[in-house]
Image 1 (cartoon, protein in one colour):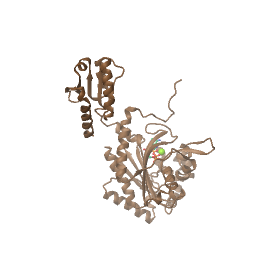
Image 2 (cartoon, rainbow, N blue to C red):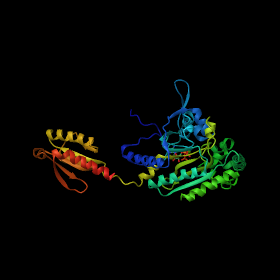
Image 3 (spheres, rainbow, N blue to C red):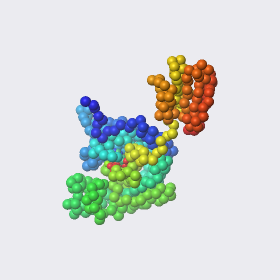
Length: 424
Ligand code: ATP
Ligand code: MG
């Protein structure tokens, strides 16, 4: 019987990989311009790291984690998000002693046992960025400006930056009890999950996507009315700085995010191109979390971009790259094939993306293959060429054709490489 991939786990096939490269190259370039450095952390962590940081009564920890006991009896979890692991590494290696503010990014797979559907998988990929050590509202604005620049360079204009503040341990408890009281009166209208959330984590109801729950929230209390003076001033300053940097945003008091550790600024970036799973990025501030995980009492803020969703928006619009090969070599006869095989290797060592069809076949069939592969140049080495010591080179772009003496072929190939580099 044929074995298939695990449900919710998908293959990225070669035809799609170019877009992933594009997303990651632009992301790295923008992140590094904004001062971030890459950190690579393990996929497996101790389960406790996630239950302590994300929170016991969140969807992720309650029902979405891939958790198992390993052969030495330790409970391990495949990371559902990156912030916890990055903070664990930051504390474990005392990175805070090296610099007052650390800006770290990480790109890689995350695992959540959710119901698979379009835009929602059990293994998905995130681009993650964290700023550790600064509580200044300019840091929040800088992070959102980075996202604006990234989406701009990816050619994604029509994204909506939605912003909220979740307050702090001083002002949130008051808000939380108001919410519990309000939702208690609406209990009959809530879904069974939210009825349970009412007991464990009432704010989570704000994140529910069920229509009746959304309706029940129509007259619900709003956190922005309950912020303490410091949180209010912080939030205003974030908005002022976003305006200064020209980052468009809207305030949405219903953004609570699905993780317990958020404080103050929280945000989501949503796209109108995506249907139901429309969030491409989520993030926020988590002052206090580094201390709770055993580190110094330093503030932090970060975001996570869903790569699958970015790629899916780009798929709808990206032009297909016109040439994917620099040179295709077609040869006829054993002697010519041997020569071409040697030049194929020379071309590759000179830096050209080169290919030939080692199955041989007619010149016509080989030329069809060159077309199929999208080669910029076609080099033909037939019996006639061989007897005269030349190769015919056809420019598939302009259609022109020249003969190049074999002894000059290597320097000609070096010239093509030069031209490729200049085109970038
Ligand atoms: P959502 O509201 O879509 O469930 P979330 O609040 O759970 O998102 P975060 O944990 O903040 O999301 O992750 C940040 C981003 O990662 C999301 O905005 C989304 O683009 C992406 N993402 C989250 N879960 C998945 C998934 N199961 N499959 C694909 N992408 C995902
Ligand atoms: Mg989710």
